[in-house]
Image 1 (cartoon, each protein chain N blue to C red):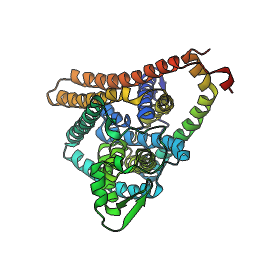
Image 2 (image 1 turned 135 degrees about the vertical axis):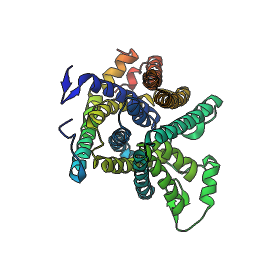
Image 3 (image 1 turned 30 degrees about the horizontal axis):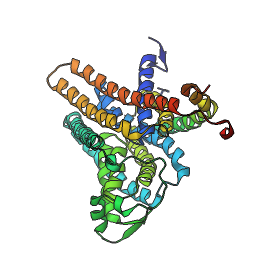
Image 4 (image 1 turned 90 degrees about the horizontal axis):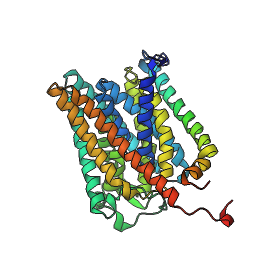
Length: 50
Length: 346
C-alpha cells in the first residue's frame, strides 16, 4: 500500500512508521471534529429525546 | 474485484470493521482488543512476523490517539513511564531476537500460539471468575469518575505490598504516594517488554495489571502511564520490525481507521454503562480468543483446514458479541435517562 511494500532499512522504517503516525494524528483530529459536530445530535436521536 | 492502491476493497472493509470492534472494546475497557489482532492475522494466514509487526504498528498508533486524549487528565506518571520505557526497550529487543530464533528453527508459530492461548485463557478465566464472583471485579477497571489522588493503602494488592517492602536502593517515589525500588520497576518493565516484542502486543493487558498488582500504582495512573509507555514500546517494536519490511500497511491503515472511530464510541459508552455488567462478556471473549488460537493450531497440526475458518469465526464472533453488548447497553441506558429539564438546558 502507498508503494511502500518494499520499504526496508532505517529510511524505509521511518517512512512506514511516519505514515502510521500521521494517520493516527489525522484520525484523532478528524474524529474529534466529527464527534463535536454530530455527537450531541446522534446521542439525542439514539436516546429518543428528539 | 475492486481495489484501492492494490488492496481489495473487501479486505480493507474487513479490517476496518474489525478495527471498529477492537476500538470499541479498547475505548470501553481501557485495555484489551489489540491483542486480538495478531492471532486474528495469524488465523487469516499471514506470516508470523508480519502478524506481529502489523499488530505492533497498530498498537503504536492506537496508543498515540489514546495518550492524546489522556494527556489533560493528569493520569500519567512520567518518571515511572520513562523507567518502564527503559526496561521495556531491552525486553522488546530480547523478545524479537527470541522470535527470529524460533522462526529459524520453525517453532515460532507454535510457541507464539501456545503462549497466546495461555495468556488469553488465563486472563480471561481470571476476569470471568472475578466478575461472576462479584466484588471489585479484580480491581482492574479504571473508575472513570475516580479522582486522581493517592491510593488508599487498603486498596494496594498484597503482592504489591510485598514488592514495595523490598527496599533495594535507589527507592523511587511515584504518583499516588507510593515508593518502590528502581530494580523492581525495571524487572516488571523488562518482563512485559519481553512479551511485547515476542507476541507483537503493546503489552497493555499485561502491563496495566502488572503496574497495579505488582507495583501498587493506582488504577487511573496505571492506565495513563501504560498508554504513555505503549507509545514508545509499540513505536520501537514496530520500527524494528519495519526495518525488515514486516509491517503491512494494507492491514494497519484500515484497522486503525476503524478502531479510532470505535474507540470514541467505546469511551462515550463508559459514562452510560455499568462496566461490571459487561465484564463477564469480556472475560468470555478472551477465553474464546484462546479457544480460537488453539483450534487453529489443532487444524494445522492435524491438517483440518475447516478449523482455520471456525477459529476466525470464533474470534470475530467473540469480539462482535462483546462490542454489541456494549452498544446495546449504552442505547438502553440512553433511552432510560430522563430528558433534561428545560432549566438545566444550556
